[in-house]
Length: 237
Image (cartoon, rainbow, N blue to C red; front, side, top):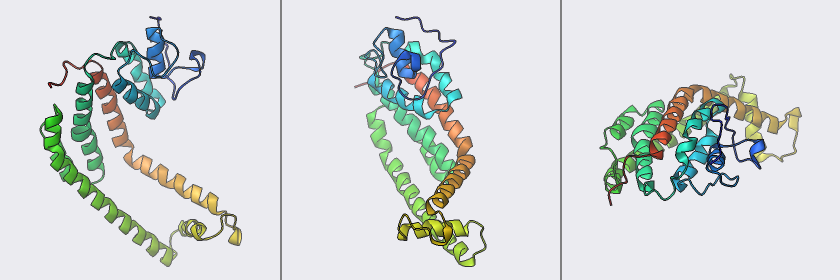
């Protein structure tokens, strides 16, 4: 094994052509194990590798560095017989931890409470037993989403009709581009720039509103990943 200086290692987003360009979590594990440079090291469980690649790329820089101490633990996890355990632990977390956090943020506290009240998912049988509740809440959330979209469209129409919102002209431009030629420049309006500004503004507003739950779920995901690397025992057959 190579001696990776974990105290100075800085994990980077995405894959890299060679170690000199940087290392992501899985590339660091390959380097630590003495394998060729790759983000698909042979010594790492495919479950841990798939989750690790995704986690490495989705986390912001500061939180990504919290994965550094896990690099040595990933080595020699392939073929250890624990992948079913890892999958079940991830399913339980998704159902009873992550999804309820987002439901709370969406104003669906009752549905969140119902998921948290489910018995722990410890094997595929208990997963199947929980499916009626999970699928029911999924359908409720979808119905709520459709209703919200309908209400949002109605509000936009009202504001455009009243012409009282500063953003109305920009929204009108975005609507117009769907029906107009992409190169049209009626009244000097840059439709594509208008659409970009709306996307940027909406993304920033949504990010600000949901940043607390984003942080909560990211922190919980990092903790989960640390737990599933070395779970106590395989799921019973």
